[in-house]
Length: 233
Image 1 (cartoon, helix red, strand yellow):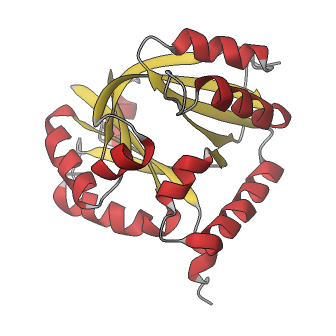
Image 2 (cartoon, rainbow, N blue to C red):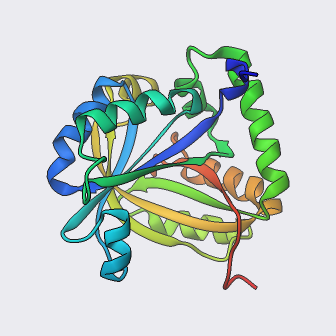
C-alpha cells in the first residue's frame, strides 16, 4: 500500500560530497531546483585509500554541500543530480540525506510555504519518532564568520559541553534573501554541538535567542538525530 503523500512530508538535510571541479554544475542544479539555502565547505579525504576507493572518493580535494529540503523532494533532487553530475561514476561523489528533528520557525515557514498544515503535522510526527529512537542530537549552527565563540559560549551556558567549528560559506537564493534577510553569499562558520536529547530544546532556544536570524550572528539552527555516540560519558 502506498504511503499517503502527507505522511512523507518531513525535512531532510541532504549532504553531497563531490569533486571541486563539479562545483559550478552542482550549484546550477540546486538553483534550477529552487533549493533556497545551501552550505559549502572544502575538505580532503583522510580515510585509507581502499576505503575511499569503495565509495568512489579517492584522490583530490572535495566539496561538501549541505542543504535542507522536504523529504518528498528527495527523489526529484537525487534524480536531477544523478543525471547532471557524475555520481554514477567512480570518483564522482556521494549523496546522503539525514532526518532533521528541529528547525527555527522562520526557516520552516520558508521551506514549507506551499505545504501548509499537513506538512507541519507530519514533521511533528517525524520528530516524535526520532526522539524515541535517539538519545542524543547534533545541533548544527551556521553563523557569520567570527561568531563561533558566541555560539559555543551560549550553548555551554545552556548545558552543552562544547562544539566543533568548520569554515565554509552559505549560498542563498533570492527567496531566502527576501524572506530571511540573508545575503546571497556569505562566509560562514559551522558549529556542530552534540547534546543529550533532554537538553536539545533548551540549548536550541538559547541559541535562537542569542544567535538567531534576528541577531548580528544571523544563525540558522537545526538539529539532527544521533544513533550512537562515544566519548561523551
